[in-house]
Image (cartoon, rainbow, N blue to C red):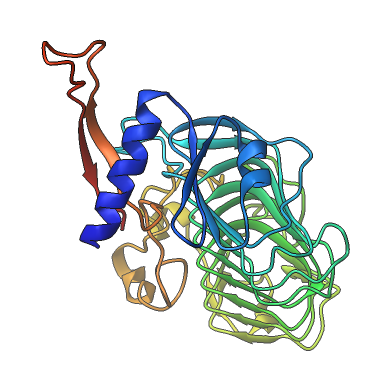
Length: 331
């Protein structure tokens, strides 16, 4: 870990002198610095890691065709990172050749698309992000892992097998043979408007376990799933009378504000924390986003980030630029 922090300090010292430069470290440890995210992606090779500092980065129409790991410094509005959050405007497209890629610690205005060109793109990880959606465009893709994200819209998984764990997510469409575990599924977008009455649609042969289905309309009595078959349901939480056949724990005569801490009506924003409280706290360790492998409230990728820095405008009398940087390790 000490070596990793020293390496990170060297990279960040180069970056902070010129704001928003992007360091790309290849599989052999060689580092190149780029001005824009499309340039960094074009310059990356198989096994490269792209380090994005705090700031805004515009993504064009370029797709990712190598195995790369994109790591930002987080997306939380109250982050300790003095350079702010990492914000990507646009979409990320992982196309054929990018199997084994990952993206972590970013706010993404658009989607993360996997297999957009119809190719086989496997074992892509999306983690610790706030994004519009994860869309798998081909059922040839396998091994997609979506973990601990805020997903503001419904996701189309293209008939692929996906592992969806510990996310706050709008809704799920067209997953086959996947695992949907320990999520909070809201069916409400970040603007607060309902766009779907069904949490899971046209998905089959999936394991659906330890999730919370929010019934945000008290007049709804329809099933939270639609067009689904051969799924296995176990210990999901919903309101009584809404999808009782899902093999679940049904709550009745309650308000979600009495169940969760800091609940803000179900909008998918970092201000909502779905910790159980009161008599419902017994579910915390196994059901919802904090059960299973757990959910990180900090949403920080496992790299150091800058909590303080001092960069003089000019050198001292001996011609040295006295740069001071203090970092803290991610969770």
